[in-house]
Length: 171
Image 1: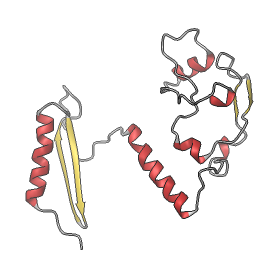
Image 2 (image 1 turned 180 degrees about the vertical axis):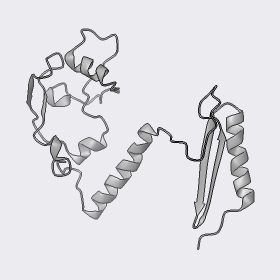
Image 3 (image 1 turned 45 degrees about the horizontal axis):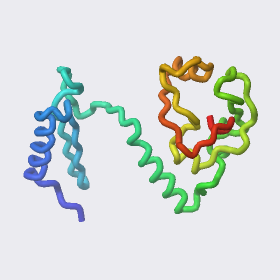
């Protein structure tokens, strides 16, 4: 049986979160506590450091990489249930990625491609590398076409997996 949330507990949570905002650790915070039908939402502070727009209970947050552990957990549940296997190609789930072509070389034109040697697997997606085989710094020269395209699309690439070989499928 789910007990209702005590007001004293909610007050302690509010005070702890308000202290973090007051200390300048966060500009603002929204908390949600739910137990059964009892739901409590609290909004404290402002949306940005130095800003004046108050945090609201319906403020939308950019959670970015926080989705990765959620996605990985959901995927592994499907693996446990037998719906997916780690080594499964993703072609049936994402047919637009089947029979893909990859750049022949990082310094080549965007239309100089070769067929990928193997399909993308569920395991590949769980590495969260997005196929980037090397890190590209803004000062990196020359501006290869793939780098220019990534810049124009405002894509951000992270550091490569040190085990990633630098062959056409690595990009």
